Image 1 (cartoon, one colour):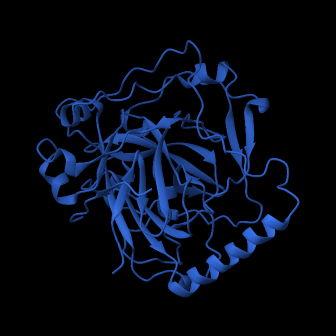
Image 2 (image 1 turned 60 degrees about the vertical axis):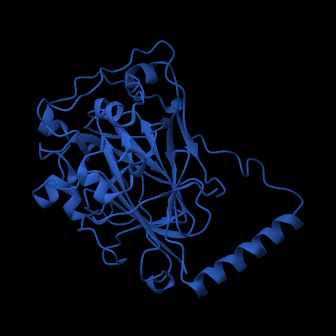
Image 3 (image 1 turned 90 degrees about the horizontal axis):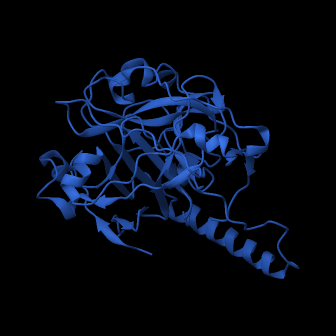
Length: 353
């Protein structure tokens, strides 16, 4: 029988079929202009709902999954480093597909494509709303209408992030494994790796020395502690088109997980743990000369932007302008990135959602 268990390994979610997902804290971009990729500032802590059934909301118990703490208007990106075998991964924000803008589905679709292909897609920083660009994931409380879910569907019911993985079918997986075996054999016979091959991809950067942290965000008084994802600024990032025929993938998902987003005060109440400190000031980060990033894969084709997601407005249109000062990084601060070569933990309980 196929194991459909999602497991948590530290702060990494490991979905059946080899997909690995981490949630990375990052600098929030200005909501105007198009920018380089912001740096990673460490992982969000991830905890199982099943370990806190006495303190989580009742709806969370029925949905199962995991939870992580986010500040109001805090930005994040999803890292897929550590994925061991090809996988088609669906990413939902309030059960709206972050790639196609269509409603959540338990089937893969090619027209429009409603998934990202791992490990070809190294990360996802936002919704697919522009040509060669995405709009950054930014946390907002439910009830304002500012989430992607609220703007696309007209209501805010789910919040959070949903993940669902599809492995290759048996024949396609056998072909891929044979190709990998041959590549490994050729590599062993080669004189040595090319310079820089296998170098670790910069995944995070330290806070700017002496930088004052931004003021912590909190949900408006009287509103739910549950959070969803809206959008912020635009950045240069491609969402890659799948080059395999759809028939290569399994027809049904191998595993899925609901990721609940919670305010820092509620995180402390539910888990008894202190939430992470509020994000570093982005202007101070840039002034200190710390790096931003640029990534481009010349062998991959970018998906066309979703018309539905192009119409999603940034959170500033709903909860006010962002008055945090912004300083554009110099060209020397934007580092080009290359591909990085691509243990089970505690199982995560699934539920009804």
